[in-house]
Length: 264
Length: 68
Image 1: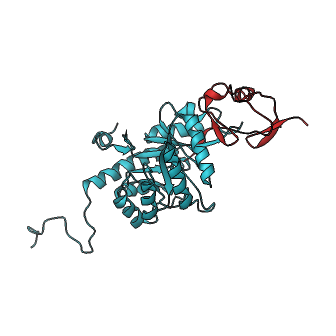
Image 2: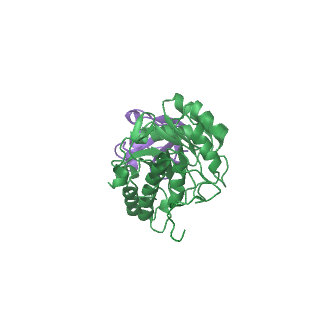
Image 3: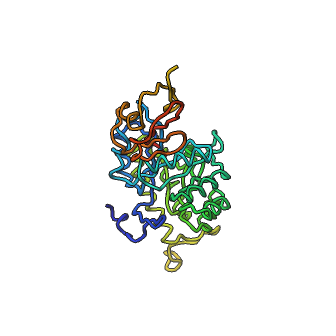
């Protein structure tokens, strides 16, 4: 553990009453191979690792991702690929059986090109899953109104996108993310679009409680190194937030004293 | 015409009497990391041995994969 990481053990991320030492959530998809994925997880030290739920087939990883990862990290199943309430609810229920967890990252896609969520269906699925005893973390659009509705519907956290999934565009609407952080009664996890470490740090500086990313690490030239960078960035961004930044000003203000100038 | 069921979207002959047999025939022993739904309803693992399969049943067998 680095000095920075150990500095404040009391600043835990709390979701649905569960405490996490890390504010970084990392996805397990799209890595060049299994070993790189495992190395990246180890470097990231995430609070949770997300997984998808798919039909059993002969392709893909030889060993079950549960066997490889489930012992060391808390797993958060997603409903990636679902476009209807019915599919999302069914996937969440199957995930609950497969992983013995009632936590779910709820994804309900409304547009295949942008992968933006269908907010209306997302709300209905959230209500249904909350009623069925799930801890629901919905991936949503960067709209304070949607996020508020999801929280009111019982979501344990809200996960607004920074930009489209896998785009690496970072946080496109910083104003919106800041507003969501100010108005949300539940934790805010920036989820989607993170491209590099500074994006993750920015999310934390804007007030997010955590960051979820996958492609930024999995598709980096050196995923393990990027995972380590993301871990540091989330910590640095959080520290900067808690440290209280200086205001932005249009006029310069010298940092060296004005008196005792040589030749003055 | 022999009885058939759909497993993971593909039609196949019905040869397993119950869900547990269907999984065993696929080399799946135990329930860790595996979930099953029959006709749109999740079947908890304790019910696999007692849950019979009938012609026309639609079965989904899933497990966790990588994902974000």
